Every structure is written in structure tokens, then in C-alpha cells.
Length: 416
Image (cartoon, helix red, strand yellow):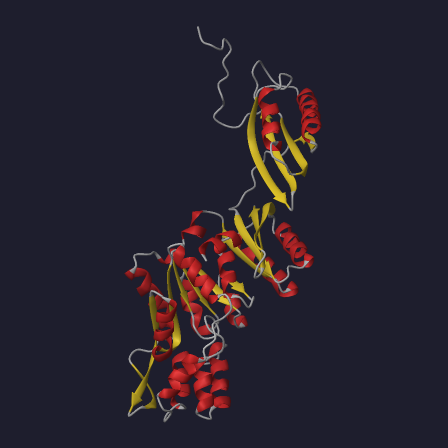
């Protein structure tokens, strides 16, 4: 004879009995969650239950806990009104014991699954204005999406909020949120929910105006007295108006005759973008391979990579003769296509699939690399790059990339 003469067999799918949502709000304190679930498990006035869903968050000491429970039929169908009444009585007891408020409402009409893959929407700003949150929420609803959860990833150097969104198609979601970003000045990044987000293992960074502030070739041109001419060529190339390889040769030609010592002077005055060291250090301590792929010059980038402890570097090499720049280049040019090839080469050397790579850059010559990577991030980029990259960041801090990758501020601090 079985121990339970009327054993219940749990259905393979959620029960078809009534469901209820219990919402707990109030000052957080130890034991609230235990008290609620203990009552649900042991109250004789409530039918046998299954826990369908749970979500809990504490915001500045204020608890919000949502629990969806379903009635498991034991001896026939369960009357919904009686079910809700029994839970309301249970809620009164929990309130009296803990001092929090427990609201009970029917959830039986909320069974329909939301179609579409879930996405993480990361909202970043310094500060984040209410209009950005309102705009994002409106845009998400406008493309059929629903915000299932919101959490804060970071409050420094930028505030980053992560919204988990279901029911929206990725392209429509990105397009709608891009308009919000333009209107509010906040950054909004979209990525599918899943293991792929935190499975990235390699990052490549552009150098000029990404890893470091400014453009090295502009600094060299200034020392050659050709700054205005080179600046015009650089701007046209970065905006996609000129072929990069052609523009590079034209700019390098203006450097003919400069003493090679000028390269050391420029390198010594390089200024890293704020957050660059934090980004690299954090990713390295989480097992990332980190490197740079630049349309600049190895005489600058190789020592920079060594000083940062990077795993790889690719760039162009300036020709030198008799202690002076000749105005020419040596070897294969690392142009737009060359950057993408370098990314693929480095990923292959480390046995990392391209879908597990990240690329960050600001210019049109970065686009092939950004699109080849599993995640391409346009960092303070030109409009043509922002429009074509997977996502864009317009914050002045390079370590904001970490929040796009899903890292919290606590995880960053633990890595320092």
C-alpha cells in the first residue's frame, strides 16, 4: 500500500488549473521570501500548488517579489474564486508576520506565450534621462515587444540598465531603438538572450580615436607642417568618401623627410581613451584574448600593445631610410579588408570561432571587421559606421563596452 493513498502525478506540462500572481512589496528584511513560500507549502486551506514563475528585485532597500502559482487538481477541477480567496487569506497572514504587503490577483488569462526570441536591450547614459527610458519602453511596445525584467548593470562611469525584452523581432527592435537613441542622446544596444552573449572570448580594438584619443597620422602631419591637408584626407577616408588604401598612401607621402625620432615623440604623448585599461584588464581576467588591429603604424602600435600586455597587433609599417621617413609603406596594407582578415587570422590562431569575437572601431575602414565579428561595436563613430554596425556606443568611456557584453559593475570591480 503506498504511503499516500491518493498520490498526485505531476503533469508534464504546467497545470490547466487556475493561476494567481502574488506581488510582495515593502521594506526588505531577512525571511520574507522564506515566510511566503513556507505559507504556500504548508497552508491547509490552499490546494496543492506548483510554482510557475518567480521574479525578485531589491531597489534601494525596497523589495518587489512576484510569484505566479498554479493549482494542481487533486480530486477534480479547482474553483478559481475559492482558490483566490484562500490565497488572499494566506497573504493576510504573511503581511501580519512580516510587515510587507502581499497583493493577490488572477493570472489565469496570462498563459499565452509571447512569440519571438528574447533580447537584452542595454540602455547607457551619463546620466540616463527619464525620457530615454520612456522612449525605449514606448519603442519596444510599438514593435510588439514586452519588457519582462529590468536590472541595473552599472552606475559608474555610466549608468547602464539592462532590459529583457520578449516578443519583438530583432531588426525592428534595433531600428525603433536607434531613433530613441538619436532623440535622447542615450545609447541603446540590442543582443539576443542566450549563452552567446557571455561566450565571447576575443576582442579586437581599433587604435586611433578608439583605444587612444586622436589620430596618430594627424600628429605626425603636424610635425611635418601638413596638418590641414592630412586632416581633410583623413576625414574623407573615415566617412567612407575615399578608398582607405589610396588615402593612406596620400597621407603617408606628406610625411617624407621626417626624422624617425618623431615617431617616439608621438608615441610618448599618446593618451589612452578613458576606461581603456579597465576594459582590457577586466576582459583578460575573464579569459579574453585582447589585441589591436589598426590602419596606423607598427612603429606606434607594437610598443603600445606590449605596454598593455595585448595578445596580438596588426598595423601598417612606415618605410624608413637613413633615419628618416621616406613617405612610403612596407608590406601589405592593413586597410578595410585587411582589418577583417586580421581579425579572422587572430581568431583562427587562438582557436576561437568568429561568432565568439568582438570588434570595436570608429571609422568606415573598420566596417568589414565590425561586421565579421560576432559583435561589432561602433565607438563614438561616424554616422555611416553607426548605421551599419551591430550596435553603437557614444559614451566617452571605452569600458562601457563591458556593459554591452553584460558585465555588471561588481564584476568589473572584482577584476581590478
